[in-house]
Length: 305
Image 1 (cartoon, rainbow, N blue to C red):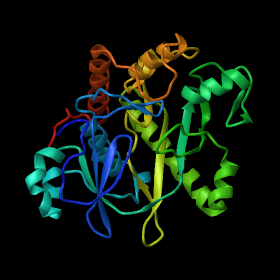
Image 2 (tube, rainbow, N blue to C red):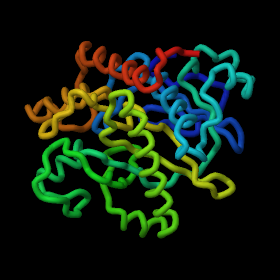
Image 3 (spheres, one colour):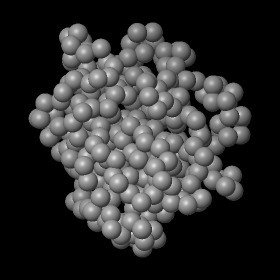
């Protein structure tokens, strides 16, 4: 499949996201297909990152079926043969979807991203360095970049199909969704992060921060949906190289973020579309990190099947 083009599948295209196409299978099921597109600073790059779509899909499936806190979730299967058996119309398109498609239960997305921060990094560090706050609320004085939060912080954000997400307070979530649902989101997000962090630590990985998404199914159950603990939605750092007080080496798309941030600081890019071209080495480095984190966390070499 072309890493950029939308695959020509015999299903209605429900929506196209920054990275994924979502197809309607029937009233209760959807097909999510992850491309090799890469979004950084909420801008889609021109260059694809080989194997990225398969890593996103297969690592999400691993977490869905490994973490106790992930249940209930929307993943039915990410196995290509099982998908083609469940949706026979896709058999002729097996190559197009191999490894990068997930059959899921349909759910109505909750319109907040549930970010959990275990360490001070990214947009949180930028705001803290400027104002000593996160989403406008004061944090402890004297924190350094990459310092650990103990306990981890539930740090929700608005969701944006285009443009930039915005960090918001927990009170904003309560106002938008009500106390009961907001409390569920916070509790499940922190439980997911805590369980995943413990597993990752056994493999020499720090999950610095990550974002979860949830949706409500027809029965009103809160399902974990979309991607889970992927290099697109998380920052993964090697434990043996962790040194607070500076940015950390990573296994995610940080090479792209760092390259683009350098262009912004030099005045060569304004942070908006269209994006600048990515050097081949940045693309290769990012592919390597995606495949490496998959292997480290799952214990398996990525196979498309």
